Length: 115
Ligand SMILES: Cc1cc2nc3c(=O)[nH]c(=O)nc-3n(C[C@H](O)[C@H](O)[C@H](O)COP(=O)(O)O)c2cc1C
Image (cartoon, rainbow, N blue to C red; front, side, top):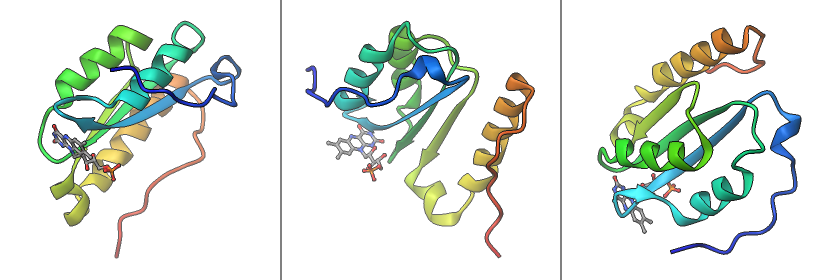
């Protein structure tokens, strides 16, 4: 199914890195994000992906994203359990660190561990 989405306002070609996130729906890439990736495919410099989910269908989802918009510099998967117990924070930091190394620049964002 192809979802109907609004025309993206920003041109991904203006950015060094485009980070795209999607929930897993029915074990797959969600239809609105599939539509977005299809629109920006070929216009991006570099991409990274993150996936949120109840279970663990992230591999199928990443494969679909990669097929449409290319190989990511890094990926980040967060399950509902990880979200609830805050273990996702370390994963977010690792994701950002990986991207930072690839870009060789200071990405002005970081996640602090909750006290
Ligand atoms: C229509 C629908 C289908 C979903 N299918 C799956 C699934 O197949 N596997 C899974 O792990 N999570 C599934 N989920 C859970 C979502 O991945 C989860 O709610 C989402 O990642 C959290 O983001 P949200 O706050 O945007 O819902 C589904 C959620 C919806 C609404």
